[in-house]
Length: 395
Image 1: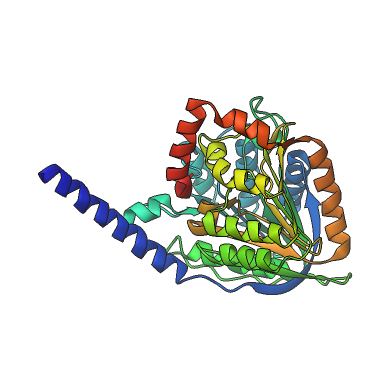
Image 2: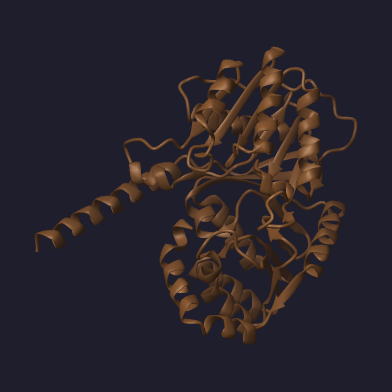
């Protein structure tokens, strides 16, 4: 009896911890930011890191970098060495990493960065109050600002797998944006907010001296701390008239979002979803099956990328609104992560993205109801599906 009572009390306290922690975090939610800028889409790790490292080498004032994951491997060490070198040159260098996402970074590496003059901080360090919620909460943003003039935003983290050096993943597919113009100031402001929320050392925003020589395009930055991204996608799905495309490494939309997709199919809207053939984490693929099955039955097209690992985060509505950023199409990104997405409507940029999507779909296999039924017939898979469903908010 006492054991049961103890479990109930602990469960209630954990619920209170999560509820109040989430309520406090979402109270800090920022509205979407209308801005302008120019963008360049990077779709391979070599292109992204070649561009990023070149810009770091050429920086002459400041480097602000924020990642969810920075691994202590060859690629991670290469980035750290470059930051140390720039700090020795007298530049203002700041590195902000998610505490849980980058838990594998060695203390020796952190000390070498700090000793060189790099301002280093972790976000979301476990602490009271709301300890359990803070342990689960992630800062999943990947932002870089160089000299207040060049910005980066997208799906890449820092590790050997992101440049296809890890054989079990093969070719790593991801999308990242290189940005210039007014949007960079907004990226820098968001970085400052995250930095100041993680440390007592308050930083102020630098001002760009760059004069734009080309016309900037309209952009919308969508920061999220646990609900803004979900509400945006939900409303756009309800408004879609012709087509919806979703690309994500994890497809766990939740019941309400899935019902919105089913309603779109009922209206005659084409729905396509692109996910990996082979997952990188346990249970995430099985957790998606109870959402995928009714979508397939209603006429959605589900594709599985089989030439490597698909980690891109993209949503497109009616071939006229495109979103690329850090948020996966899953419950964790919707409700428990800090995310940042960039939304654009420029026809030329959207056509360029569509060419990339067409190429990725050619490297994918269409999932059929018959194949899904055969896969789910396994007792092991059904068990993993049940576990995945129960854990889906935390995967």
